[in-house]
Each structure stands twice: as structure tokens, then as C-alpha cells.
Length: 270
Image: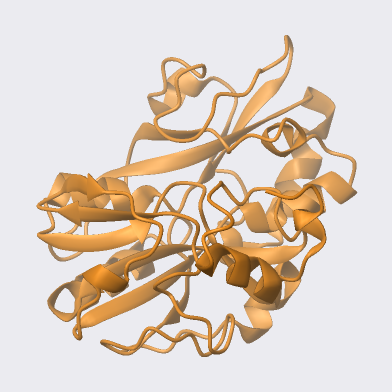
């Protein structure tokens, strides 16, 4: 990836992704622009997921929903094609990971419904601008994500654990991080837990379920945010026959600034 990639516009970055020139996590791409998780399901499962998102709105804030079979976005990045504008996807069959392609044209079906879900990468730039450490970005890594011992609320046929992302903070900046992230409700909002990870069922911070481990310095407080990978854990637990998602950390980069989501990211239900 070129060193100046972060300076390009979202449209230029998505075009480079579609050409196969970028195959990496998107943590540091297009700072300030909102990013989104992706869940694609057959129409017969779409209501279950819509209900799952409504009941778990902190983990799954739904930003946009496309009509069955329609691959083109209307709100987050008008005209962008969901089938090739994420660096890496995951294909799921009967709750098992079946592949990680860089485009999903061959998997596309006329009944597929695409859901775009808010992402905590969207507030990382605000944390950084306020002088807070964003360690995964500072180190060029993917954010560490953990399958916690907390449960998401079941909805229809979907159930599973809550997945959380982690950012370590010095104690005197914990409240500032909470307040800043709380202002990004469409991107998971404030943290669900700060402090001892064992209190939410995480035994080893050095072994994330997804993403990369980051160092937690002595005295720092690990802070945990609800994560848009929660649906992937639900696909596994619920043994969904077929689904497509983003690969963790390989997000859809929208045309919107993170602060615009609450005003412009409208949900259109199929």
C-alpha cells in the first residue's frame, strides 16, 4: 500500500480496493471518515438480523440497508458496489467460515440483503485529535477484538456473544475517552466496560479473538467498546446457512465524515 494512501479520498481508496491494490485492514485509511461493518444475508434471514440490530443497537447500529439483490449503496457512498469495495470479505456456510475472498461477485445472489453497521474506527480520529492514544493505529495494527462473556440479546433465530474492541488508556484519560466516544452513537458510542477484562469474561488481552494484540502499559486501563463483529459470532452460534461479512478490521469506507452519521446515515429497510 502506498505511504500516501491515507491522504486519498474514500472514493479513490474504494476504487483502489476494487482494483485489488489494497488488501489490508482499514484502521488508518481516510481519517475522519466513517467506516462500516458489513453483513449480507438471504432475504429469509433479513428480518431476523434487522431485529437483532434493533435489540443490540450499541453493537449493531444499522446505518443503511439495501434492497434484496441490489449491490449499490444509496446513502453512505452513493453508487459504490458492495461486492468489491471492501478489502476482504468472509463467506459463511452453516455457521462455518468457508472463505475470505477479496470480492464477492461470484457469491452474489438476487435475494441477498446488505446491512451496513457502524464501526468504532469512525471515532478513532476524534480520540487522536483530542490527544488520546489510539495504540492500534499508532502501531499500524488492526484493533484487538475479543469474544466476551457477555451475551447479545437474542432476536428471531439469531443469538450469540457480545464481541468487544479494546483500546488501552492512561487512567487520567479514561473519562475523556468515554465522553468523546459517547458522542458517536452511530459508531458504538461509549464503552461497555473499563478495567479488569476478566469481569467481562476475557482472560488474556494478548490473545484477541480477532485483529492484532496491542501492548497495555503498566497502569493503563483497558477500555472495551461494543463491536460490529458481534454479528459474525452470532452467525457461528446460530449456524446460519449462508452469509457474507467483512473480514474483521477490513471495513467499508464511507463518503461521510464520522460526525455526519447521526444526520445523514438513514436506514432504509428492504
